[in-house]
Image (cartoon, rainbow over all chains, first blue to last red; front, top):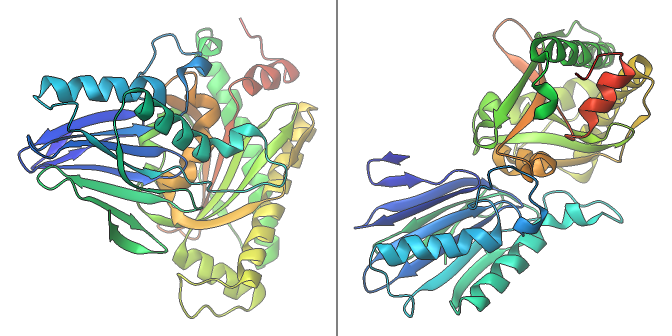
Length: 164
Length: 206
């Protein structure tokens, strides 16, 4: 979806932007919002990752935007198509919260931290450095990435707005 | 879901009745607590795209007060009782005499009271379903959160997440009057739970 110069990225979705357009995804809980940015070409991308690994997929047609291990390579490929140089790309991450904590919680309840771990492993594999992150906690986040500056703005109910 | 390839309308009707009985009991419990009538909408049963899960409660960024609990037993799933901040404030005042000074600041006691309300409502929802189906269904200790609806509800979609991009949601709205919602009940059984419920209710799977 593209409204003016705002590109909305849905849940389990990928978006790219350039020329000062803003990438936005709302209501990140245990999901991770991962952004890549080329500061010279000013192209940016965002993935709203829901689950850590496509190994657990049972769906017929795999939605590659959904899983950390498939989403990040796809995002990278789209940015390269737009002329980004992968040696210049830097990553930022937000989300991966644990919205509810249960005593002796099973693995599925730790999904937020696992999404973050998996995204970081994938970035390391692709040799993309992490510029900054705002992950964990127990609260939701809405994020916006400015493709002109690479600044990631994070909004939450408890802590208001901050930039990383 | 393949389960719904055969006779989908009938199966959806059965789930609507499941939601009707569960939410009906919860509404009765709420009505007793408040000592006034609580109406409810006909339950909606539908496959909802993940992206739209929060639409009914005002959108992904809408701040809501939510009680979440996991359903354990033969037909596991996720259950949410959601309210606007204004409704939570009214509920706390009517039920417990708490006067909130700030809708964004809740004391431990107020959160605990909201949790208990959610617990009672979910308990009555589930016990009526257990009676109906003969399946064991028990709520875990509820958790309360005041946060963006999208962030909260996405937590209930993980079991569906590995299967596709939508989830089967049984939702009911509690009505204060014709216009205003008192709260919302969302029941999202795990994908595997539907066949068990149908079998126990004598609904042919194929």
